[in-house]
Image 1: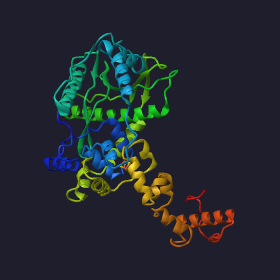
Image 2: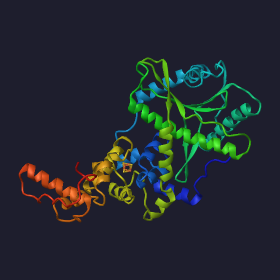
Image 3: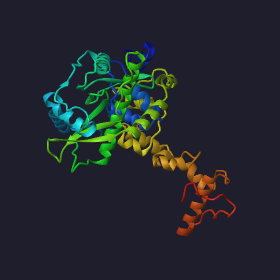
Image 4: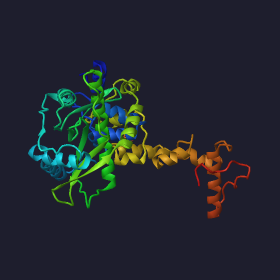
Amino acid sequence: MPLPRTPGTALRQRLAELRGPDVPAKALDARALAALAANPGCKRRAILDGAGVNKATLASALGSPSGFGQSQFALARGNTFEARVKADGGAELLRLVHEKLDPGAVAPTEAEVPDLTATGPEGRTARTALALRDAHLARSESGAAGWTLLDHPMLALDVAGSPAFLEPDAVVVHPDGGWTVVEIKSFPMLDGSADPAKVGAAARQAAVYVLALEEVAARLTQDGTAPAPTVNHRVLLVCPKDFSNLPAASAVDVRKQRAVTGRQLSRLTRIEDIADTLPEGTCFAPDLPTAELTAAVESVPAEYAPECLSACELAFHCRDRSRAGGAVTSLGRSVRAELGALTTVDDVLAAAHGHSGDPSDPTVAALRRAAALRAEALNTPSVSLPSPELPSPEGAVCR
Ligand code: SF4
């Protein structure tokens, strides 16, 4: 069963050069992929992630450390909770899947838990695909109707021409052959509901796993061995119940997140295309002098937006650069969208004060009207109010 195509030797070598000699590649995880898909226009993030650069280390080397990462305490608590949920061959986890997603199926009194150990991510991915295929064939050919639990399977997803290896907490194969992603989180579920922002982030992450599982299902069909299995678009989110260590679960519909993430990932510029535009010798090794490292990072175009602050380790660096360059993107995507061809704050102010810009442009007209209204309100000299025949500011900047 072929895996997503791996980059050619030349590209792999080029990406290793970009990362720096002897710098290990940082694997992309589903959280990073979901964040990458949230800003598909940013070539800087695409090449850094594609080359396996550790962006947190890079941000520190640039003098703008990120505030990302979980505390050791939170990690230990999360691991303890996950072990508890999966104890006894995953009995409690399967009970929750049965109760929340498939109550009509036979109760999971026992389940198969295949061994997924193998060497390296490629080996683990192949082992997972084999286990899924075996479970699928057992149901479609011999009519077996049990449950199968894949504990920490490894899935591969093609991202801009390179495979990303992803590790969901669990995948469950139902008696009818359907596949369900399970996400186990350590934030609490209080009275049956959890923090919507955290649930949203978990749903985006799960959607990436769903996309990767769909690729495995599609490859099964290519083999012509059996009809494609169904990948459930409702995932199971398991969290501690009311600050206790007992699990509570909820089914989360990720259809929307799956559609958005799939569309955004398909828009990512291919990594080799970005690599080809970089100057010879560009390197992001964190031990380089700061000036050299800054020049390397700045050689790749970025698309900073305030949303980066919650999604990318380089956000403080890119925000400083964006502000220093007077880019209107630092004011937010909605403001940027309203300003049309005006890309810097200086351009906007010059247009508003009548020093530049085409007065028949609705954006320029709206800016001038806003500037005149402001001057009138503050009783300061400025441009006069535009005449009535000028285009209405509706749909432009100030409403
Ligand atoms: S912080 Fe910088 S590198 Fe990261 S997504 Fe935003 S613009 Fe791109």
